Image (cartoon, rainbow, N blue to C red; front, side, top):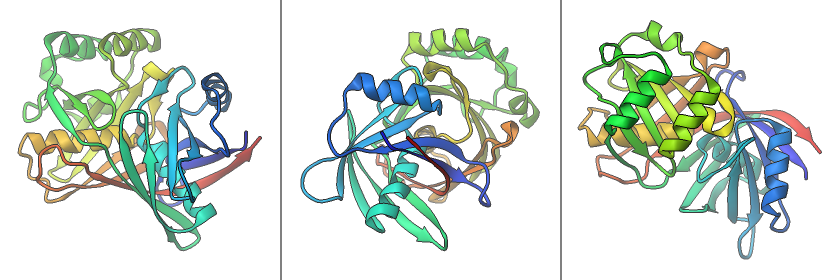
Length: 282
């Protein structure tokens, strides 16, 4: 398989979250996609095969090195850029395992940008077990939390637990045991656990632990960003129609995720980012 390597949500032609992208001519076996994703080693690799006539509709599956996930934002942004480079700017329909979304590809000078329209969002308060296990994993207590945004289970195509921290330094010091993180995330059916610090009503800094996929941390997580935006909306947050989430700064891979949303509860949100091409490999 020809694997394109593209970093999504890059900042000033640096950073971003690397994803593998494979454009297939025909459906591939699950075992083969899982093997290639493990060999690539990125947090996600997207596999896309044409769905129907033409090049504007694609069946997409996402694999981490250890598991298949229902939706991945940064790999979708990377896929949009790859489709735009091959077939031109415009909107592409993507049929996922559990949802149907779109991604827009747009040239920006010598580079490419992409915008995905997420699956519908939803959120609820974290259960006592979800709160307890997530806090314990990172050595946190309730006193570390920002009481404006309590722990929650959030969703926009995939499930996450979010913990909003009052202290930026506490976010920077995030550390946890990978095996224990894998156990907790799989126990609760989570793709990531998202830690966030509020800079202001429209600006946030985030880190995402992705032990469920065998990766300690993602430099940029579009699916969690979409889910977090839905959570803010559910809480009545004064978002002003747009948010900026900076991620990856504490791991040396600065990334910028731009989100646009309406006030309609549960409606999809738009997640945008720049990309940079890393290369290709067989």
